[in-house]
Length: 129
Image (cartoon, rainbow, N blue to C red; front, side, top):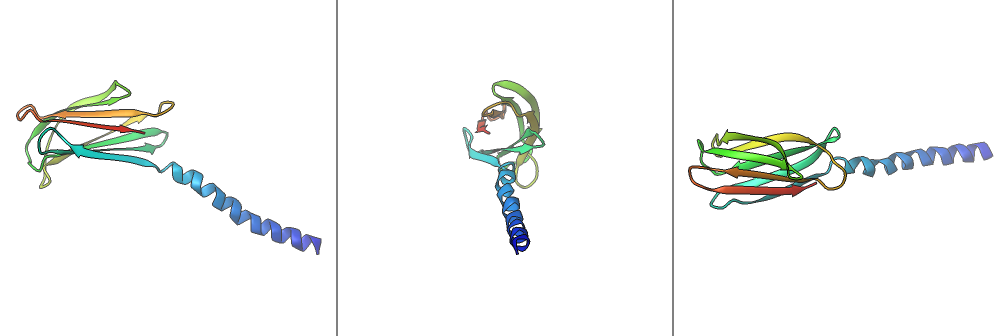
C-alpha cells in the first residue's frame, strides 16, 4: 500500500515540476516596443527582443511617402552599432533596419536616429531592454 501511495505522489509531482519551469522560459521571449512621432509628420517604431543570447533591435520609419532617402545611425549604450542610408518603399512609404547586438550586463539602451536631409525631418527612437 505504501508503494502505491509513493508512486501516486511521484506521478502527481511530475506535472507540477514541468509547469513550474514554463514561466522561466516565457520570460526569455520578452520584447519591448516603443513608438512615436518624428519632428514632422513621420512616425517611428523601435523593438528590442532576446535572440540566441543577443538582442535583436528592429527600427522602422514610416513617412507614408515612397522614394525618400533617410540617413540613420543605431547606437547601443552610446556606442555605434551601424549606420547607413535607406529609402522608403512600397505603399506604406517606410523602411526598417534590423541588427543584432551583444547583450551586456544590466539594462541595454538603444538609440536609432534617422534624418531626411531633403526635408530636414529627424526621428529619434529609444528603447531599453
